[in-house]
Amino acid sequence: MPAPLRLRLDGDALISNWRTLAAMSGAAACGAAVKADGYGLGAREVVRRLAGAGCRDFFVATWSEAMALADLNVPVSVLHGLREEDVAIALTAATARPVLNTVQQVRRWREAGGGACDVMVDTGMNRLGIQPDDVAAGLLDGLRVETLLSHLASADEEVPLNALQRERFAALAGKSGARRMSLANSAGIALGPDYAFDLTRPGIALYGAAPVAALEGRIRQVVRPEVQVLQRRLVPAGQGVGYNMTWTAAADTEVAIVNLGYADGYLRCFSGKGSAQAGGIPVPVIGRVSMDLTALDVSAAPDLAEGDWVAIDYALPAAAALSGLSQYELLTGLGARFDRMWY
Image 1 (tube, rainbow, N blue to C red):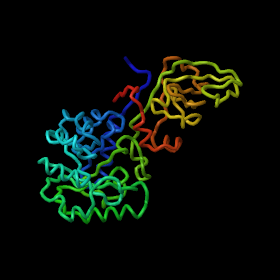
Image 2: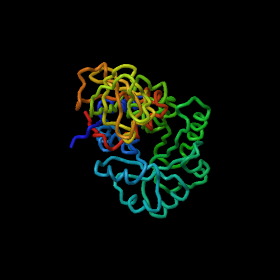
Image 3: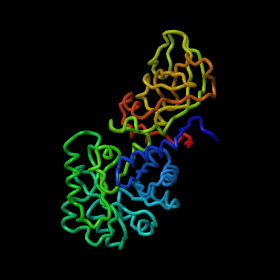
Image 4: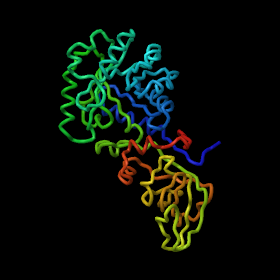
């Protein structure tokens, strides 16, 4: 049964964004982070499209995410590594391999007789990864390390830590036995060729976000939420709309109630700030966004009727500036009630 809200997902824009980031990666291969179900878009459809465009490296967070892609027969790296509970499935996975993050994970994989793996090194983020000194001490000796990774802490800012992390990572070249090295995420790609190494692994920019100014104008919007009108009504002057009547009609106002709310990821911070398009006509959000419903002033759209669709303004950089949320939150928070429709 069709849902009363949908995400229109632009497959051409997704591929265009990957190709843009691949070109910016220079001689390095360009992978794709598809964790959190492809940042909420649907990982299987994202992988199908990017693999068809030439992407050969995919990154997920957990083994359940990797197994959901197993039949697509693409190389998948599992960023959260190898718990004891993961060993059995990791040993039998045909195309997925762990990204080992701790000394214990390295030992666990070696003792289990595991094959190819990736390894994360902490160069200054203090989140996941073994220490550079562990590599120098021979911790990885004898392992089949496909890719040595690290993660930039502040790639979206111009701070000295970026160069320091790059230098620490570059110093490990040839010391781990790894076939490749990978440091740059979406924002890291924009820092320049010194950060690309052998493999980049963009995430958020693939899906329409511009986390740094250098990507603005080069990345295309992928996600467009659309919702149906449940009711159109006339609100007389002096009356309010929604919880706590935070908006009051200054004059008789035509209002549309649409099937969208914070349970769908359209959060209360858009109350009185967000907007939509009704047949290309801008219509503002009025009153308080509630769990399942949002009100729009549609006085400028006289032909809009019950059952019609409106497009929510949701270009990620602009929506982030308006709402105060990160582009990551805006994207991954879009709920399961949306039909996801690729075109």
